[in-house]
Image 1 (tube, rainbow, N blue to C red):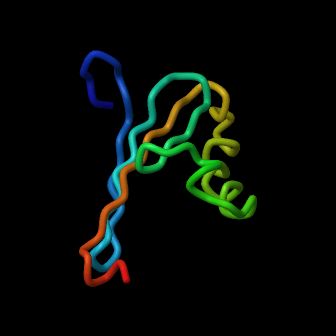
Image 2: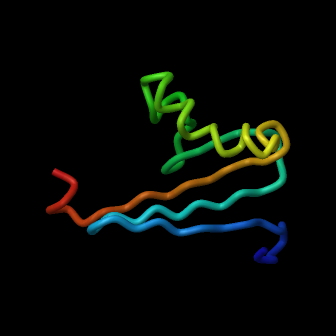
Length: 78
C-alpha cells in the first residue's frame, strides 16, 4: 500500500510496448480509464464486465474507486 494524502494500492501491467498503471482507492465504486468513465471508454458491456470481475470477486466493487492510465508507443498503437 502506498501512502500519500489518501492510501491506495497500485499495480503495473506491461505487454509489448504498452503500459497500464492502476490505482485502487477507497471510494464510491467509480472506474476511470485515461480520465474517462468506464462507460465512455468501453462501448461493449462484455468489456465492462471483464474490468469489474476482480472487484466483484473480492466484494469491493462498491467500496473502492479505480483509476487507470494506459500508454503505448505511437508505432504499436496503430
